[in-house]
Length: 124
Image 1: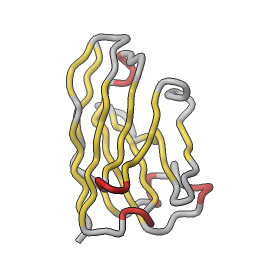
Image 2: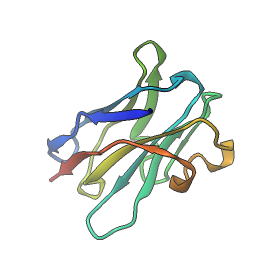
Image 3: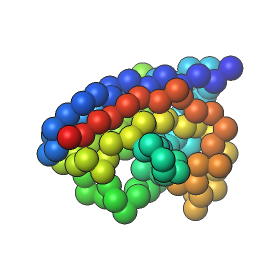
């Protein structure tokens, strides 16, 4: 049974940084595609960043240059380093995983079968 647990969210001021973490259990973490998605109130879920099993990364245009996705295989943990946060980044952030996603679709939420419960990020 695959479980994903996010942490690290909080309330910050514009321009500050946060690092989100997602601990994965019950899966061969190293062989999974991983992604971060977010959903603001009244808006659809959108991709933030994704990491393919080949270590290829992709980012949404809105976060390029500010956010960095990474992982620590020894800790089965996915990270999202978020710098220069602005109020438009306010959302619930979700971690997602799946063992088989074509590299061209790693930013598509419907390709992921496993999701965490989310962690709230509020920027004012």
